[in-house]
Amino acid sequence: MISPNAKPPVCKILDYGKYKYEQQRKEKEAKKKQKIVNIKEIRLRPGIETNDLNTKANNAIKFLQKGDKVKVELRFRGRELGHKDIGKEVMLKFIEIVKEFGEPVKAPNFEGNTMVVIIDPKK
Image (cartoon, rainbow, N blue to C red; front, top):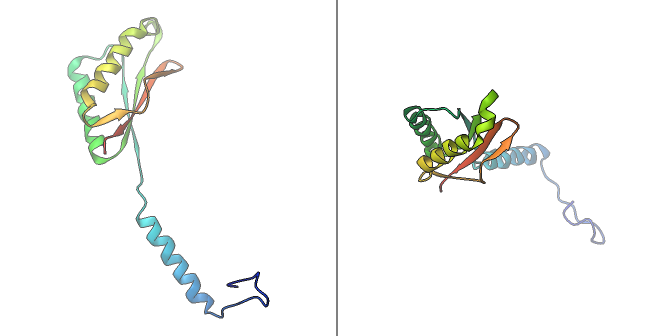
């Protein structure tokens, strides 16, 4: 039906197999144009040394250059939870290293015993 509200209703006769085929082609074209965004994860600890932090940051930079988002988790265990300020410093240092390739969506926040931040790649 082309116009069901008209008097009399207007219909078009067509090959249903051809119509289905064209619909599938349109869906396939739409799928090709989609951009799939992956989220890569990097785990840190509060007592991480600077060279290890730089290595993790370089991996994050590679992910950001490919166009992937990066989720950075800083895990606290045991007595480390009493020194959240040290973990915050480590997280801010990490963000500072990768800031020219991506920016954080929001400030680092706690989820249980982990501090989490998601970094989007710069356009």
